[in-house]
Amino acid sequence: GRRAETRERLRVPPKGDYVVVGNKRRPLEEHNGRIQILAMRGTLFGNPFSMGMDGHDETWRDCACMCFKEWFDEGADAYDVARKHGLPLEFVHVSIAKVSPRDIEAELKAVERMVVELGLRVVLLCCCVPAPCHLEHLAALLNVRVVTALAECDSTNDGGACDDVAVAAGAVA
Image 1: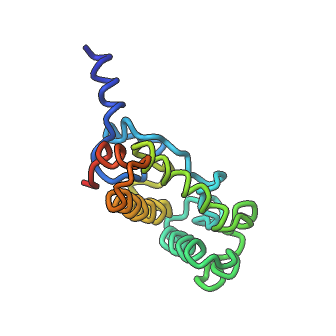
Image 2: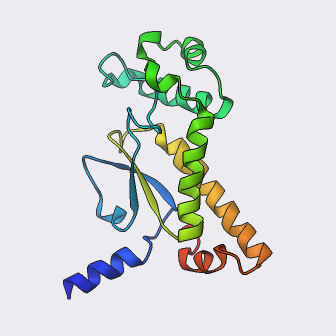
Image 3: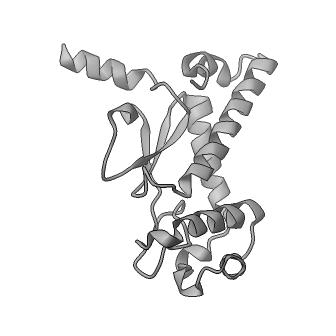
């Protein structure tokens, strides 16, 4: 019956990318069966670059996303990145800005391992989607890493932890 269908839906990983971005306030049925990770401001994955003083000024969205990408990829100082792109320094959240991209890297590695070793799919939750979100950068990065790791598992074929998971997880649709 209905309970068996629900168990099956949760047992089989959803189709699509291994890691996607979703909206915490408006969950999508297509995200059922994914591990949900809160990734909003105030969490380790939160964007230290705000869209205005109240965080809701859409004119700053692209700038905040661009600042996050540069800060994360280059490991640059958050305030230097904000200055470079014309984002007022009061839009940089000090508590998060003091976290380095290297700190986030350890958590990204944990998410990657969940997918590769356990065959899980993940949704990073914020409140932006369907509008552009800094998490799209992290999701894209994680999907590349997962595909690479699964390909390495396939190429080594050493009977390690990835063998069964690679088959169960399937290819990115």
